[in-house]
Length: 392
Ligand code: PLP
Image 1 (spheres, rainbow, N blue to C red):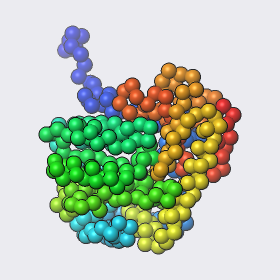
Image 2 (tube, helix red, strand yellow):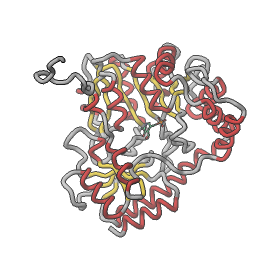
Image 3 (cartoon, rainbow, N blue to C red):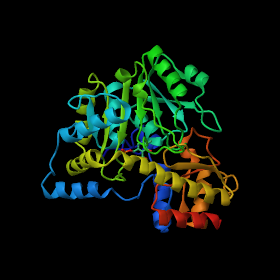
Image 4 (cartoon, rainbow, N blue to C red):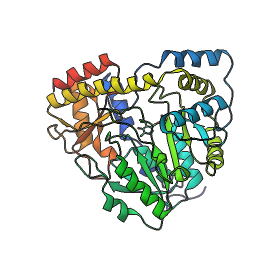
């Protein structure tokens, strides 16, 4: 029998695992489910699926559209996505080789990183950040470099952007409208970022999953529309939020034909394809829903935003008003607890409302008096959450 007493076991996690696993958001969801609370933590978005999208999915399953599709998606959906980009942003993409239907924007991001970046490369990510943006890079041994946005309203700090760029920088990631801050990058800010990309020959990866969640008359700007940016921008978005189908896993990437075959290859390798019947349903939604459907999303969520903002103020927290997306970051200094995670757990125990610790969106030591609340909820549930928050 080999004597292993003197040596550590080789049955260990990878070097990466301890650094990236256990998202705080998921932990709060688990704790909330255990006590039957109202989950304003995860961006699950439980508003209704558009009826025609739901019907199209059921019909597609019944008709037998249940087998693998092309790894970059069915032609009908690729064409619908290309038409949408043209309609909304005036950007022309060839549906045959410049559109990738991905298993969510998450997969689009993952395969873009695999196809375009190398271990040791640096990618600038603005802080506060969405955890997947950082952890996906780390999981591929690519280094996220955090560039803090300036408080209180998360403006781009141009000097911080310039000084963060090194010879190893390969890409800048922009999430607009942003999770968790709700920030919509302004045109001058996007111009600065585009300048940096052109000057240093960088990719721009944009996560535009909240493109229709814009408030107070704001308009989403697709950064690929800026001069000279189409060829170096990987646009990521999807239907998870727009059609309330986060569990269906239908998203996309659009990018220049130079980058797409490699992205499609890695999508094939890691995800095979987005679920077939849900691709059909997403295509039906994009083809048939009127433009007013998208403006209505903004109006509905603007109303939800208003109700949650008012309840948070009444509860003695200091919410920042988000310009887009569907989260509110609120200062929760009045809640007991040294860390944001402790404050979130206190709030859950006291009210049955789950929020995410702000620290999940910042480098260690930051965000400890912030909580993030999601307002993409059915009205009745959101109103009950507001009532409970007011009772605090
Ligand atoms: N990107 C951002 C910024 C998000 O907040 C989320 C979900 O919360 C996603 C992407 C996930 O998108 P998908 O469901 O298309 O993978």
